[in-house]
View 1 (cartoon, one colour):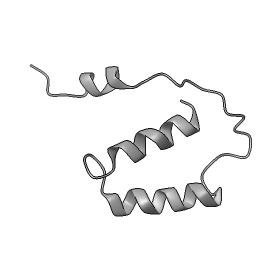
View 2 (view 1 turned 180 degrees about the vertical axis):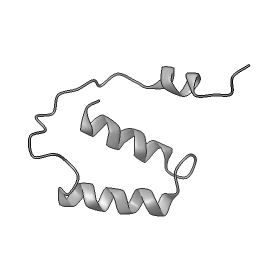
View 3 (view 1 turned 90 degrees about the horizontal axis):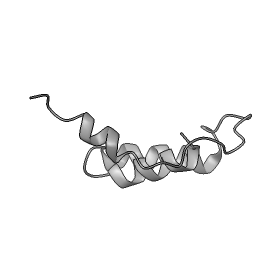
View 4 (view 1 turned 90 degrees about the vertical axis):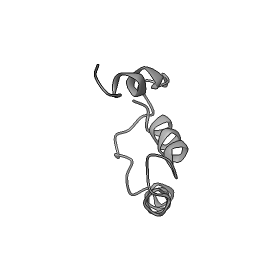
Length: 60
């Protein structure tokens, strides 16, 4: 998945699925360029992950 898309998803989960303090720390590292791989050319899927969220629910 595209790095920027992942960052967007993590921001969106702050306060619901993820602890805001942890997300803030993660975003500080992103802003410093600490997490993006040097060879990341920006490729990857920008597809929404709603299908993943639906599948991760309880099994009937």
